[in-house]
Amino acid sequence: MNAGRFAVALMLAAGLLASPSAAQEQERPAAPERQWKHGEYNSPLDQLERLRLMNPEQRERLLDRLPPQRRANVERHLRNYINLTPEQRARLREQYEMFRQLPQDKQQAFRVLFGRFLNQPPERQELMREEFQRLRRMTPGQRLERLSSTEFHYRFQPNERDILERMMELLP
Amino acid sequence: MRCPIDAGNEAEMLVALATGRLTPAEQEAFELHMAGCAACRQLADAQKSVWSALDLWKVPSVSEDFDRRLHARIVAEERRPWRKRQWAWFSWKPALPVAAACAALFAVFLLQSPVPSNNAPAAAPVVVQTQEDAQKVDVEQVERALDDIDMLKQLDTPASSPHRSPAGS
Image (cartoon, rainbow over all chains, first blue to last red; front, top):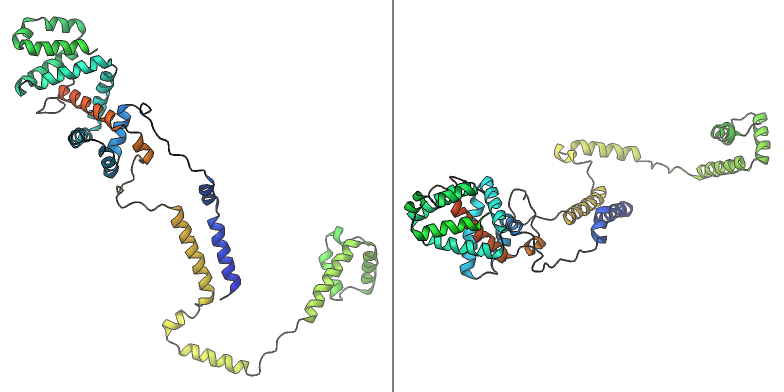
């Protein structure tokens, strides 16, 4: 074989290997992998978005850190969240942001009230949900009037009234 | 005599000098000029050395049976099957370095283009998730957020027909 031609070919290959992009790759200092400490994370919604957009393997690795029962719970809630339409997700995100603005003790009190709501029979839950949504659409004055109305007292039992009234007190 | 370099006709003058096409008067004038012009003298010396080298080159003589062997090869070529004749131009000698260069190019291409994982989604992902992104997720915070979102969703929508009416805000 012609040694000259072979040498030219090798020089061409060497030149390509030393091309600017390859050189840049080699010269670029490896960025140290940042270790995120607790409290340095972005908002929970940002993190939730990251989790939503992860591929199944990455998500699996992350959820492996949770005990089985909690993991199953997260997976179920995440599945529901993923299955929402973008509009529904946007709406819930907005409501969640509003909820997050509440002081921690109020958030916790609301969660307790929601637990009591879940203890009601399904048909009563449905009635209470409708009332909750109606009250949320009202102005503060209308809400006060409604909560002291005969109809409200007639329609709901004391325990149900207590849940609804206190939920309204907690939310802005 | 005007300097041929300045006049821009030094090439013609030098070739004419080397090939003896200058008239005796022109040659004498040019030689007189060169005696006082180092640049022209240098050019003329270089030209002379080229012509001397060409004079020394001897054309290799053609062997006596060159014509006979040439005709024999032409006849043999014409008798070859057409498929073989199609590849007659091909020679491994130039092909090998070209193949080596192509292999090197391919290697460079592979090195610079990461091979996608089999597990990656077929469509281009909107967000590229890196290990760093995964580290940015506090799974316990996300767990609480999901619980709260589920709570708000249940209050917002009836169980039977999701998202019927807004919860208000």
